[in-house]
Image (cartoon, rainbow, N blue to C red; front, side):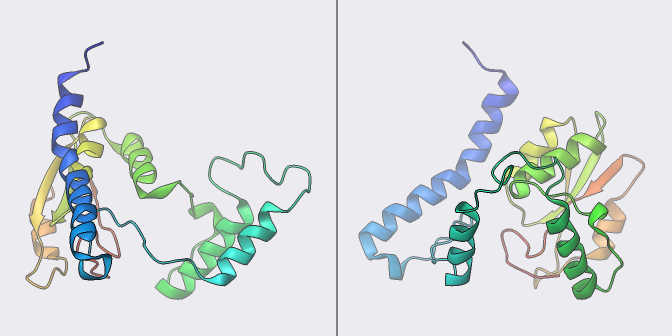
Length: 185
């Protein structure tokens, strides 16, 4: 069964990050893992802390009714409340659990948000350099990506973002730490 042209084009564009990952794996084989630093897909290569492992074992061993069933669509209320509390402390803003929605990874979360806010022809501003998949996420929901340059040190250029905004602007994607530079805003 043939696939849509837009999907085929998206596969070609998005495959570059996968090619970089595969090239990184080949270079690690050739030169040794300690001599190659792969910054392609953000795939952690360090073990999680022992406390995480212990908590995971404890949770997996929990046999309370419902402990391994589906959670609410927005995430467990107690976890959302704790995340809101932490973000409030760290960012100096007032958040409650109802302001937090959990997702399985940034890609899933961004796609849900873009589906919720984009109408056909809306624009999404993205600072350069950017994670290549953002273009696919935006076009999947009828939007157009508008790229703006970052400062030389990869900090946000607020003036460039403001200048790119217009009546069609529906969103600005800002990640922190920034992907792919790692810059924290």
